[in-house]
Length: 391
Image 1 (tube, rainbow, N blue to C red):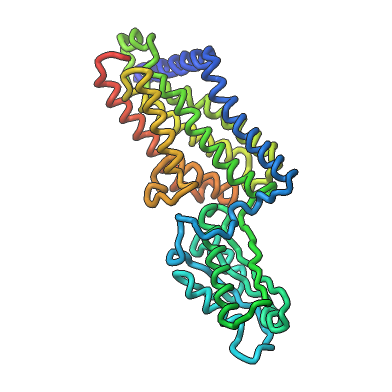
Image 2 (image 1 turned 90 degrees about the vertical axis):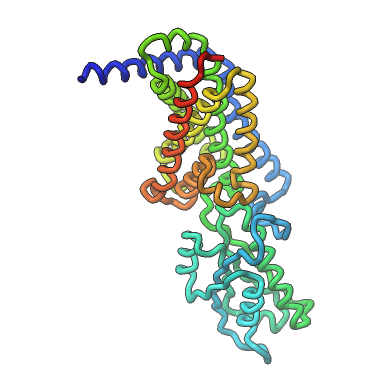
């Protein structure tokens, strides 16, 4: 019995070693796997360094006050508010309560908090999209036409929604001033971006997207040629080797390559931008390896479906653009955001590296990635078993 179980494992081990040798011999594949992702990190470093030397503040890129964001609308936003103002110098109604009323009119729901601790926790748990703090002295400053600052706290991980939230609060403050016919009195919403690792907002957010994007699609790109382009596999299939063993061995080989790629990507990302992420290096590598696993399974599935190398390339390009568009990083993709593997990998990275959650606290996303990988492997095996010949 033990010998029967040993033979498949030995065959898989030998096929993994063979696949690794083939990958290492392919200089172009090695270049694509390791150098191109590193080049992307280098380009981001160059852009951020050049922009900072040129006087541009890219740290507030996600905090633009433009109102053309299509991923969130006023009716979707849930805000919290903490009114700390105790001054009463205005002859009419309480100004902080009046501003609260205008903000409430601009959002779906406005939740009143007594302290910032509860609001911060709800922002962390995504129960609210942001919260406003009206400081003490708000009414006194407005009464004498002094500039008045309120704090708007937004989630750094909600890259797209932050701009809409800021425009809503800005619109509410403008309507508040117009209602009093105040021209000189200014209210400035000071934006506080929460859950941002030390080292830079843009570098952390875009860098995180690049490393997950590279880990998932970089491995998928090379593994998409692994079956359709493997001529020696014809002879191997004449032996007792099963299709499932072939698929598993190829996935494992590319996961090993993905693990090494992850070490490079995470190291470059952290060191290039001097980031102090809210998790440890080992958890980062585990997350990146999970992303590589889904990328490897995706590529193997493409290779099993394709009849020729050209078809595999065309299918990968479709997956590439579809993944980029549906990544949830640029537009809201609805329920697909909770299914697609790259989206889940990005959420894993955000929840751990930005918010400081442990892997045990994000097991649901890990299970989704594992389920996708197993499903893709089984589907690839089913399709591969019904192909009469290899292209």
